[in-house]
Length: 255
Image (cartoon, rainbow, N blue to C red):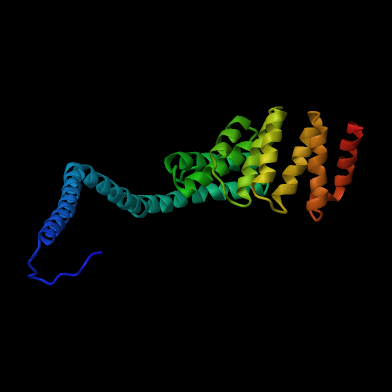
């Protein structure tokens, strides 16, 4: 059992002397171990400090670089891209109203009045929201102009997490594949479009298209599943108004 000794205490017996020597030896050993550990830590830091500084510097560079890129480059490019795209978007909007459609869709793609068209905006401002949106407009313009390969290419480049535009872009690719008579591919895109963002507008539309294509290629059980989902989950949709007819057709070919 350890006993407390006052400062200045002198050992009187051999045992006391032996205990003091042992205590001093143990204490010295502890401090030596600590000193060795500290020395090794210092040696490691000294040896690795170049790499540590590089890692810290790289992290700082990446953070500052991202902030600088966002503020000094990306934001001005985004504003510039939206300004360039404005005229092309007006052409596209006018084309959807039905007046001189082909000409207006072409102008939307190629530009006019000194402004870029959707093709140039998508290329020159890639990485911006406007550049991404230009892919959507270009794809839909090509789809209306019956240039289905380009429609697929541009709509495929559009990255849409939007509730409506994302599914419509996927569905547009499905429409292009239908026109190219690649029905298996069309079905895949319609199914993806229906599942991408579940809502009362796009989901029943693409379930209906998926069902009709599935019937055409003999996937009748799948067709029935798509039609029944419209009836069960989207009763107020336009597609639900005559869905019983299509359910009957799918059941007929299955029996």
